[in-house]
Amino acid sequence: MSSKLFSPLQIKSILLKNRIVISPMCQYSAQDGFANDWHLIHLGSRASGGAGLIIQEATAVSPEGRISPEDLGLWKDEQIEKMEQINRFIVSQNSVPGIQLAHAGRKASAASPWNGGRKLDETQGGWDTIAPSAVGYHDNEKTPIALDKTGIQKVISDFKSATQRAVQAGFQVLEIHAAHGYLLHQFLSPLSNFRTDEFGGSFENRIRLTLEVVEAVQSEWPENLPLFVRISATDWAEGGWNAEESVQLSKILNEKGVDLIDVSSGGLVSHQQIPLGPNYQVPFAESIKKETGMMTGAVGLITEAIQAEGIIASGKADIVLFARESLRNPNLGLKFAKELNADIQWPKQYERAKK
Image (cartoon, rainbow, N blue to C red):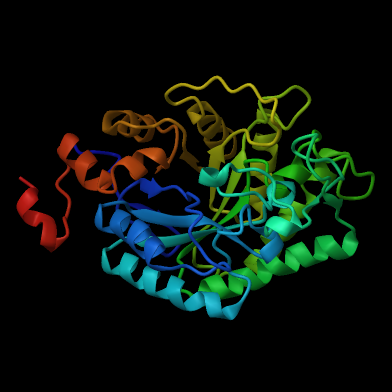
């Protein structure tokens, strides 16, 4: 029986050779937003390692949108060149280069994890952060600035400009980051959005910024290329964004022409209670797929070939995104193909290890 994980997937004009996707993972290794050889080797090795789609880490649409000073960015034209080189290599490996565009909002201006991950002040290279409301992620940190109408328009415009650059850099899939407690998610959730204008309060108002960003991105992103949105299906906290709202938002995004919902969860509040375990987020992807008819991506503690095969074969999701497991093994696609007896093309340079 042929492997479903290694079956191709057509999304608009792009054909993924298999359903293995490398999840966007921050490397905290950029300088002034610029990609470098670390990113070339990190992303390139996973393309030669057999994955069908490689999504570049959360790439900030503005300097203040970075999680840390070492995040990748796409807010100026000079940042395009290195990403273009990386994408050429990914394509040469018969893989598809994707990008996740992001704004960290109140979770910005933090040190990289190996430097403690704490909030940085201006003397430490940090900056003022922005949010839907003047409420921080932690009580003991400097309060973010609540966005005014001009600030909201700047965010939308920054996503639009970054999309133009993503096109120039040769990305073939674009994902909008509306998950993990970053800016768009902060607007979605009543636990972080206390606004009383048209961007807060009702479900329709809380989703407004995400929809306006989608529209701005679509005005620059080619119609024939796939557009994904990553959401946190639930905040895992009482009174927060929930699975029913995620289905409702996904229906609207489907009508607006988004191709796939990348379904994660959590990240908004520090008091979240997540019941971690293998496949713990898969039911959210399955539910959205069933309720909307949309393509979905499953993530979270998926580490085995047979586990991923089961998710695709049972129709719970259309792609499986790997993060930590792909950090442990860049050649995930080659390894899983062997385990599932799928005969795939290896890089010529590695063929002698195929048997």
